[in-house]
Image (tube, rainbow, N blue to C red; front, top):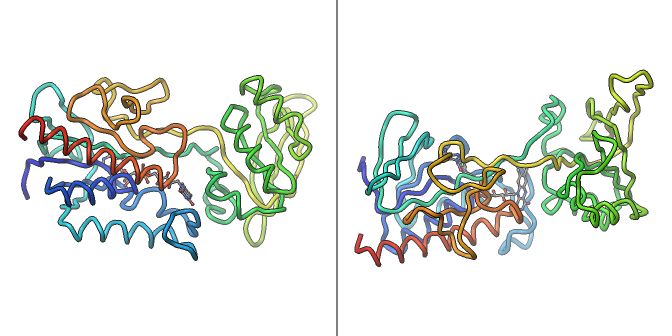
Length: 313
Ligand SMILES: Cc1cc2nc3c(=O)[nH]c(=O)nc-3n(C[C@H](O)[C@H](O)[C@H](O)COP(=O)(O)OP(=O)(O)OC[C@H]3O[C@@H](n4cnc5c(N)ncnc54)[C@H](O)[C@@H]3O)c2cc1C
């Protein structure tokens, strides 16, 4: 197995595979490491209805299998393994896989994604894909004229609640604190929406339902003398308490923002380290969609190709 790659790609989601399609067709002979989740986040969902080219929708695993097959068709060398550290102090750069083997590379595309944060309730796993979601843009459409709850008190939670209020019949916003952390404008929009009911000082204890989510058990003012348990009837439970980009192995090696996302330059995939590019959710706290990730994977491969050509690598 070659221990050097002209173009090394970390991540096997829409961003990594798309980068691989472009890089392999540009003759960069890419090597791609899949990490712990070959196919990425979409392998955990059922229907994907907003990826262009599938008028009837497609399951997440099927979509990722097809993008992977397209990358393999042009010769991408896909390998198992997790990048655990990097050394950008001299060229060629070195990436350690699984804490033991090293691979060197002339260019590196990081497409390691971001994971949604969950509350840690066993019911979130039990009802995954059956009413629990961390993406209103992805799944909101399935809750037309139904009742949903959004958990969180920041800007993202308010945005998700407002987005869902244009689709669902009723939206509860479950907020742990007695106030919203979101910007003033966002707060005003949420508080003035007739469809959104903000449940301040509520925590979620669990979910219930025979066929998917039918409701949530909440507690008001947990641990206080006036603590009260309440149930709400809902069909969808949306988490909006943040995401964690998969960048631990890059800390101190490449510029990250305060939330851990890789910082890229303008509309490009360039990071502050020359020859290192970022694509997909790992560098995108804003859109976090399969199609935007695939698009940025394309950009990263084109940026890598240009870099390699300009440096005669
Ligand atoms: C349940 C669910 C449903 C969704 N539904 C939709 C939808 O309907 N439509 C839509 O557009 N979007 C949807 N999304 C969002 C979409 O899945 C993401 O925006 C997209 O997958 C991001 O692609 P990515 O390639 O950046 O990263 P990911 O898909 O997160 O893939 C990251 C890859 O990096 C690998 N990796 C991580 N760390 C390392 C490491 N250290 N070394 C090597 N590899 C590593 C992982 O194994 C994985 O293969 C959904 C997300 C979820 C969770």
